[in-house]
Image (tube, rainbow, N blue to C red; front, top):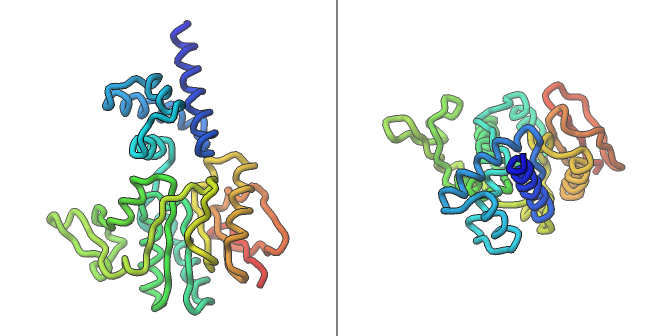
Length: 259
């Protein structure tokens, strides 16, 4: 019993540390998987979860160690054209701007930014810039490399196949896609000013309602006048603010910032 209580206290301490240091909230149903992953990572480093925590709380961990822990603590579920109707909606809205700037927040390993870029190119939009951000440094490194398992949704025109067709590497379209490691709840601003469209899909659901509203408030300030803020249907937490109009869409929740 005492051992179980001590383990629970250690786990709660990790949750508190991740929130206080990085404002990362770990949903209750994801916590068991996180602690298993932390134990495996600690073992690889010849540590225990407790000794690793003590180093973390004492600011004795390296940047690379923290990057791995943050990676373990955050969700990375994604795939190319995960929500085709949303990708098509973004391409449709992008036509309103001569040089559309699109920000993908919580982009994980980069499949969404590349899906957006491919769709914009296929729709004939010549000048665009897609910028993806994620708190996980390993995820951002994957996006910057532009190498993935082959996917039928991505034509050879945009990515070349190798390893017997099992993998693909994005080519020229990478010139239109950039990535940035960024914590949306941190103090450092995103290095992508005045985007015309901001999309955050399946990220906000991992935060409390109060935190969701704070994130949406931040993104609304970043968005260019006349631009669009797009979230998944159940993520907006009844958010509303002055200067924004909620639009009807079956694909997602869409807010337009008044010019």
